[in-house]
Length: 257
Ligand code: GLY
Image (tube, rainbow, N blue to C red; front, side):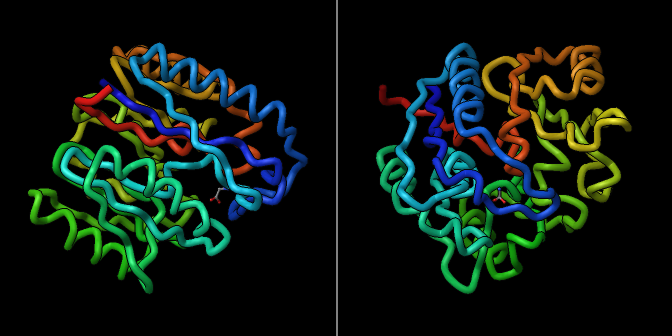
């Protein structure tokens, strides 16, 4: 059984963190409609969706991926690099404790879940504005006893590692080669984003395909040509808050219903 944890869109989303984008007016009702369609796609992919409530002052609450990283053996509660986001973690900890033993990134470490790409036993962690060396060291200590290999990757042109590279199948990655160095990913099959769609590398692989923004048809076509089943969703209002499809859920497998 797959569980997808999502989180309510805050009325304060207009005050979200922005790093690479100019602030635009965000229509909360449109974001909520996009979230409902995304949750419906998760259900079609086989997930039971658990939506957590947002607290009163959590502009980025919908981007729940940044608050934790879930493995089969444990979950790591992140310490988001943006201070405004640290109030998001306690409720996520409560939700995850039902499914996994939890370990926590402690100060001075910072890790955003969006910087963590897990491919089998290899865990690529973006060294970014949000994720620091101390956080990466703590990831290493937590994961190496379970047989995972943590590999830091420099991220400079985008917010998170997963803005530039995501998994779209078994050993198959979708990348924007202009935003991440090729070296760490050389041993995998790769699909590159269409050059006109630099923001298109974020896809959510779940069930037997990917949930993918409708905004990137040329890259979507490349995915389909390589045999990836693509379920498109409208995510353009969410994108104004500098979030994409992986950001909006935490997916985990569980034996309990
Ligand atoms: N607005 C997404 C983030 O910056 O964390």
